[in-house]
Length: 152
Image (cartoon, rainbow, N blue to C red; front, side, top):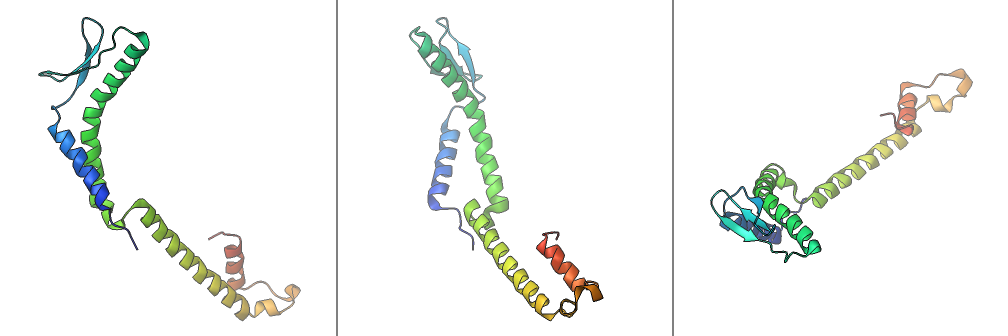
């Protein structure tokens, strides 16, 4: 059983898309003004200024923040599209946890069936009832040995 994408996840995605579409078009770049303060620009206009008041620590952080904001403008668009594509392809599986749980459940059920078949085969094989020196293991016993050794 899979869990569909939750409404709050859809709301988050819709919010992110709306913010991205409302923002000034990209790409954005960082340029320093006459006071060495980072300004975020696109090809047409100034978008933001991250003032640092000439304090070294604030300046370093303002420059790092400006670089992140400018890069995030392009990344958000790509990330939203990529998430949409993945949901179109894999949405029927539900959330990753639900898909993993479903696979684990099927794996456990299959292992239980194999264990039951192995137990049945051990009780029905006639070569195991003879002294070992008098016979070679049959194909069933060879297969069981491979299963016991995880050689499948």
